[in-house]
Length: 465
Image (cartoon, rainbow, N blue to C red; front, side, top):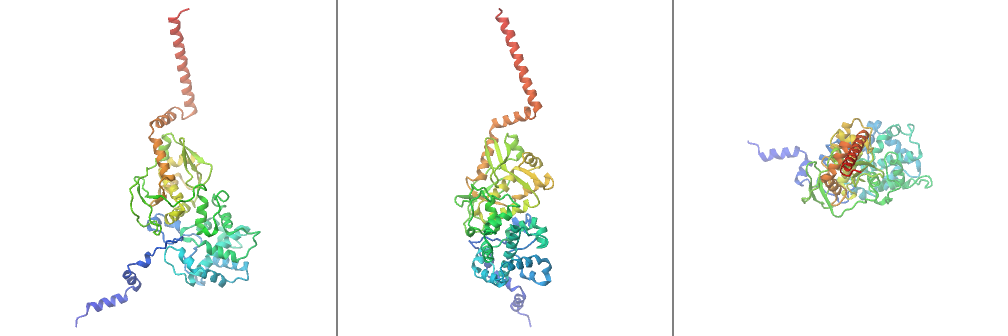
């Protein structure tokens, strides 16, 4: 008796991954449900993530919904003692509030927490516990740092790794809703005379590691803050450049050509291909070529990424101290702008601009000499490599007449002016050093003396007394 092929296929399907079959039948729709209100993005586009995976992964602690609650059980508790320690530290600050009370508070905001995430999440009890533990960890570190009590006796991992822990708080994949932090902070009922509002507590912590425009930037209402990354991003951009969402254009960055397109619909994530509109942005010459064209570099006195100006042949760039955390921060800030383009394209513009002007070691040397870069990161070759790969696969979404398109147009216009090129060549050839300048002045003086002597000799010949 021959076997029925349909029966054989039915057995194979039964033994196959039923979840995958279900996804195929649904057209993978559950994986592509887009949340227009998302502010937390735990799935980074492959082309951005693969460029440097390590900068998107935490070094000290996983936060939010990135980790499983299995890790808090005894079998793996040795690696998460600091999480439990901070939870108990928070619980001890208000004995009248239990851990279950914090879970109930998060449960009351279940839908808001779900709406924050770009990818579809199930806010069940394990995930609520993850949010509570993450909030306890962040808040206790902030409070202990404010009290000056973040010592090895309190938490050896935090006190010894504080230089990496604060970076983990700013990773795209490591964010917790700010309203969840605010809710638990309010439940602690701390003395307001000794403890500032949560926004100020956060900024007071981060200003020890970053040049945050704490006082200069207009305050952001706590209800308008999405998470810690958003808060710090807001205070790092120029205070006179609030993000705008109208009249935006975009282009896929390429050093040799720029393909531009119109702004994608707000309900779509930035990495979904939008309609194409053919506009162009001129490439920016390297620092060496700009200097050869007579452009002078100067360190900007006022801080703020993308606070770059060009006026009367002087290109002012804000100061940047390069260390082991620089690349991680820049890539996470640019990734955040790629997802949530309504916050502006300040770090994206900065990354693209620096990628343009730094092509080789000599470009780094020019910026070092002018005090624009302070290099504590390996060799100049490493610095050049960092900036050359920083803007890979980035999509610029910004104003048509914004900082980057406008700056590229002005720089190229200056470089194409032949008078500027001739003047720059004159300065390099004849006035590049004090001795060369003295020689030129002496030669001009001798020439004038010779001409004067010739004049009077000729004059006395034709007009004798």
